[in-house]
Length: 452
Ligand code: CA
Image (cartoon, rainbow, N blue to C red; front, side, top):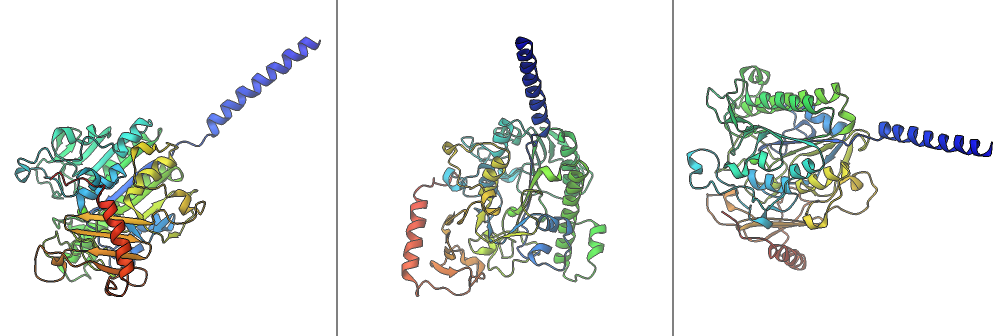
């Protein structure tokens, strides 16, 4: 009898253990999906959630309504390719020589085929692929257009888009859009096509965790919009601004399609969605001027003033980040990789030497203090450092007056009191200048020479 009871007890234990393991498999939260949406050359002031009023962006706005808005969001470079190199590696791109734009596709790139994201670097796509995620890039690459740098050699299972720095929106039979390694003739307005392909990627991978990098070329030049979008902005009289508005509105529509698909697939509760611009709006001569507005910031794309490096920055993760969160401490696009990996349960290896920080504990209040005491920039002779509320900056004087290759003296601004960098306090606070200069120099010493 005793033996029988023991057998029954043991069977019950085994049975319970089995039921338990089945339950835990069913209850275990599925690893979250990651969607990183990047706009190109978007002005600081133009989205609704950034205070813009003339261009409705309800879908992009919904990300901050349902998640977090970062009021001090930065990128590590003032234009396209360096920022993307930082985004994909989670490291300051100047550490590995990716300080400037590489050559694009086409004749201008002749002799520059060796330029691209150095093969020594590991991308966020490599890491998610390693973790068992389906990985896809839809949109602009701009990290090298020759075969060794192809997105599908840098961790992406799938690629739909173009390899260079800019692209026409109406393809008119020209074939520089690629699906994988095959040329693709795209009849649709490019921004809408990228939305469609992002939706298709989500549809095909909804059963398993995925990482989707959706890199629009909107609202970068050429300024090309569809008539149906232009008609919405009859009230805007400036023709460039009107085209810009139509292009931004088309991008918002495409983001809306992606959000709708995530909702229909019941994935919106289990997906982190990042949104940034790759740099500030190009507003000065010598840049790809597009009609964007950076107020209240001073400066433009290509400068280390706030107008070049401070960008709209949003993160939605329903059920994890409270709706309507506003985060005021400085963050940078380098943080996207460690944040996304942490959400996916991937342990960050210190040997990866990431400069980014997992933002989640800071956003939810589990960690105190600031994710970054100090942020740094270098673009040739231009440079900047933000340390607390202070910024020491040396910027391209082209932004101010006649075109020159000269940079300013080092200027000191108190960003919390003076977001527009209008009052240089360097003479008044020499010790602060010295402190920030020393910090910047010690960072600068760690950097590589630019590769091109
Ligand atoms: Ca850009």
